[in-house]
Length: 379
Image (tube, rainbow, N blue to C red; front, top):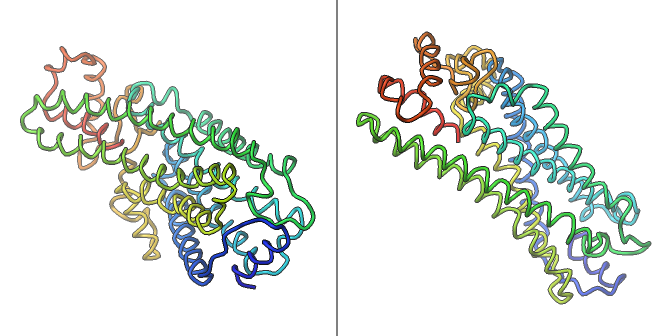
């Protein structure tokens, strides 16, 4: 049964004025592309963290791992969504119909929640680097991860007990999901998370810009700092931009269509839905591919080689410190290589003694650049 036929039967059965549209094969191809990109990218990220000892030892990468799992779940729920347009009478049962919205809502909600957890982790790492190892422990990371997944499941499971499903009704979001659930649960959740991410990343960029401004006094690093300062804002705009572009149209269409009956269109809803799901395919690129250490592990895995055997495996991460490698309560926000390990301790000690701007003149220019550049890199 084609999508157009399914929509026409739904229109005849329910009397709703949904907009019929053609192009079923086009949507099928789009779904296949989304599934392939999302599943492959997130499986690669999960494999890199599990197979690379250095990456798996970093607490911050546990949040990236959780995000990759939730995004992988998003990709795996798409075939279930497609089944309603392929298998005849698949959506006539109540449980099958409700699971269509519960599964995808759970997957997307967990992905959004993990995005917020990563933003909070980076906020602590950049704004409070000296307290990072004390605040972000493995127990804390487990609690934050479990809280994100539990909250997502709670929000997504609400339609199982609060719905408007009736026998013979079309299994569409406009008919099954209550208006109040969209207006007072999903939309506020999206807006709140977006605002919190905006505040966190704005504060991160402000902190990075402050360090870059102080470093401009060192002439030898001025061009490097300017580049890193620009990169910090670029990454922040990429994260917020992709999140906003992917999810805002879906929320707008879902809310607007409920209050304007004539505007209900399955075509526009599918466009917005696919755009929102596509965010899960972009996350591996933003959070993993932009990291040199992940890229090195990806290339090794694609070549069917162990990522631990690659020279880059000596790097831990350019994101946040690990408990084993960070010294002086997390003052060093990276692990130096190529013979710089012995210098890390002395540099970290100097940071504690020269935390104010007036004392920074006691540090060597290269040492200042080496420590402070890390904060700009990790944004």
